[in-house]
Amino acid sequence: MLFSWLDRRRRERILAAPFRADWLDYLQKNVALYSLLPATDQAKLRDDLRIFISEKSWEGCGGLTMTDEIKVTIAAQACLLLLGVEHEYFDHVQTILVYPSAYRAPDGEVGPDGVVHEGIGRLGEAWPGGPVILGWDAVLEGGRNPEKGNNVVLHEFAHQLDFLDGLADGTPPLKSAEEYRRWHAVMTAEYDRLCKASDQGKATVLDQYGATNPAEFFAVATECFFEKPLQLQHSHPQMYDVLRDYYCQNPVAWFMSTGAETSPHRHRRPYRGNRSRKDPKTAAPKPAFETNQPGWVRFWMLGTYWPREVAVERLRYMLYMLVASLVFGGLALAGMSRRASGAVIGFALVGILGFSAVWLWLAVKWVDRHGWKEPHP
Ligand SMILES: [Zn+2]
Image 1 (cartoon, rainbow, N blue to C red):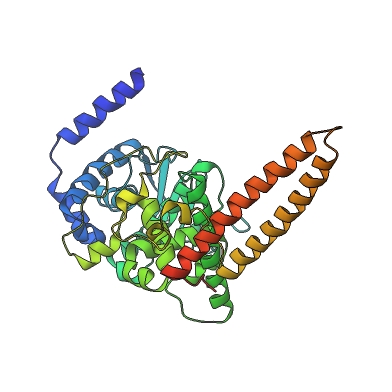
Image 2 (tube, rainbow, N blue to C red; image 1 turned 180 degrees about the horizontal axis):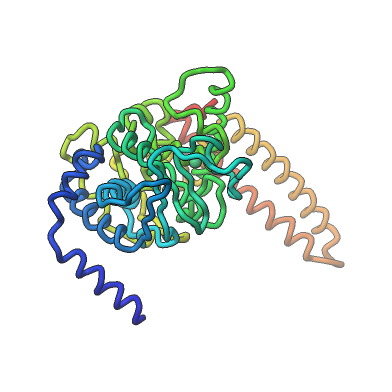
């Protein structure tokens, strides 16, 4: 209680000071995405990065002298991930180590999380509960050239979001079972698609380093989402929608610079745990395929989770089980003088299965009328 009050006071003092002009220069020079943001987001980012800088331990390694420019450039890009949600400034990351250049790791060193980059000349590294390690040249390169879609800061801090639930599995904490189901369906299909394209030597919008494992896939997808949103939305619309709803941000709007975007953080909640993310509907200017459907249809995740053939097959199974329950209930009823519970169970199953089957059948008919979306190959 006392500490949180002291924290709040300290943060208020930091934000009460005007934003330094030289820091603004660093932002404009080194963080290209900053100038694309709406003014409200720019202001929030300037506030967030000052708190972020003050609450981390910054260390220059390999002869690098730590400077404000390095801190501002890294902090701005890390905090960009959090613009759409209320957050605690990556409070599980205490230390940021910066090398002058892509640095050399000791031979044979392998991260416990499976997310350590190539052993020699790593660009960056993220450890659960540990430091984030970055090469300054890679930070600058990524920050100044978003069109390339490689950004080591966004990448490593996306890993940190993934680590929040204690697992480096490419799925950060989400809000609901439905969100997990949607995430799993879309991201698994997209990961498989990238792996296949990588095996076949095909060009892809996503960096093929993402085919390493699902954790890398999420980090790479995050880089692409913020830096090449138009291409990502065009060729992977479902994944774009999933990431847009997760980050509660719509980078396509920055690049289109229509000026019509509303502030993406109106209903902010903490970013941890199941209640972490804001209601995606409030952040979704363009509804996803599923969100065009009424709730009773969306329940079945048709098209995304179940293609039509699968839905029809499940419907058939339900009918078989319904007939079997009817027979079971009927037989139990015939011998009811001895035991009534069998008949009750049998007819309860008939009721549940009948209700579900009619519901699914109506949902399939609804999507038939409004069009199916092909699931990803
Ligand atoms: Zn990585």
